[in-house]
Length: 357
Ligand code: TXA
Ligand code: MG
Image 1 (cartoon, protein in one colour):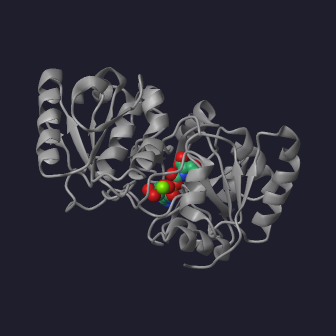
Image 2: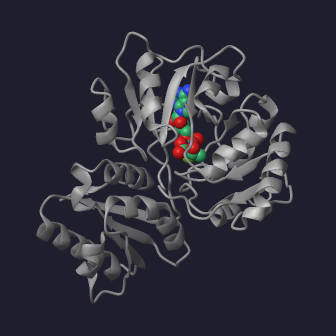
């Protein structure tokens, strides 16, 4: 345990409480404390991005290695100038289209930006979130806010205040509870820091790839890393990530009948070995395991629902006494950017392994 502090959970469903809660949260940030807050993607664990000691508290609370850099959140575009040397025209144009929103830009950092924020790299990641509480909180703090997802390292990202409390109770001063986060997956990250190279996609996320590419045709895509022995393309893109405590077993394929047979026979084999199973299946496929003693969770009808529910579903399932979670890629995974991003998270939860049917 790095330290113990009482954690205050403030429900913001009463609008009257908002000004007072924001004033308190802003003061805690200026004094070097930690405030968890909702964004449109996931909950963030916020601290003053320019305060080395406050940043150290983030790493301690999350038990996160300092080799993993943190995104700085701003309340308006002009605030980027506090963190980055410059913003390339292509990056600024993208920000003008998608900010506020689930897009993070990696830019060349200014000298005074702490090394702890950027993992010693000459770059800084910046995002302007699209959530009224997040923006009001950053304004109240009068500082850019460093915020990783508010989970313990390697755990699924939190999409509800109770997920934050579960992982970080006693390690964060205040949690601003703004209800469930609408997108449910972290921001899409694009690297603009190499002036002579095309912008590079570092992480799939809440801004769908097809929307991004429509505005950024020069975008270079990461090589899909399916093998744990290959080096990570960017810090923080480890294969083991977002992992719930149960094993995650994944299936993907174009032929529905074959996929269904593969899922069922894997389920039967595992049940025969005495394993306790749950399954996460796109809504149209929930009857695929009918007749077997398996708790089947409907993942969602479309990619927006599936993204919004994924992390909460993993956290809910791990509360059950189960050994493994079986999950199938939705049919749209090959062309729908949100489903791609959700699959990317599941793949990491499964440490990079999946059954290609
Ligand atoms: O939606 C989000 O992005 C959420 C909310 C809270 O804003 N935040 C989030 O932060 O997902 P986190 O810490 O869980 O993921 C941040 C990732 C790092 O793991 C790393 O991959 C990338 O952002 N990153 C941060 N700074 C970077 C930099 N200077 N260069 C390259 N990648 C960077
Ligand atoms: Mg995270």
